[in-house]
Image 1 (spheres, rainbow, N blue to C red):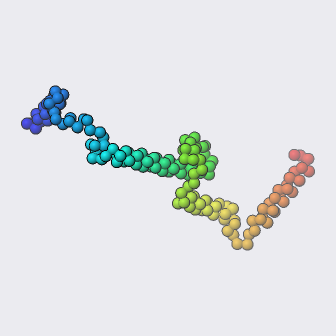
Image 2 (tube, one colour):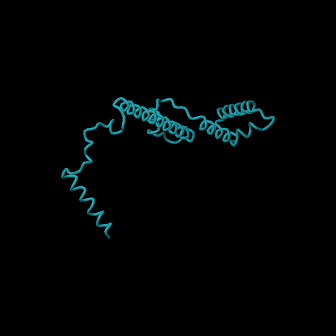
Image 3 (cartoon, one colour):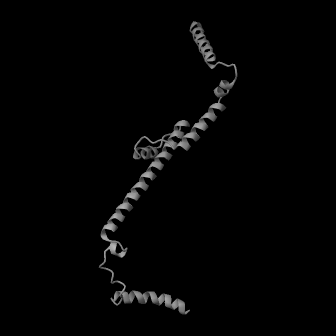
Length: 157
């Protein structure tokens, strides 16, 4: 019980005595920020400059990562024919326009593309031994040309 009374009244009592000017804890008001941290003015200026430079580097790295992610998203949008996103394009522009994917992501995309090619019908046809896709393509084009000629000769169409 005494603890509760002390906490409730003690804080208000400190505020009252502080506003009357009886507190000695405000005697450091005339010191500069450098002196309060135990540095000379030159050291403090150098420290502040270093903090600003580190913040700029972090911001640049963050912008670069955001642009890399946006590039990856736009790649998948192109691949799957999805609508483009303006925010991704603006993030890429903010990073300098020409953003390359990290090696790991590029390698993953390449592996996915190779797997999809192997899984496709043409990919499976290409893997068959003794099958020449060039000659097969030529035969298909010749057949298509013959069909067009016979369609022109047809009087019903």
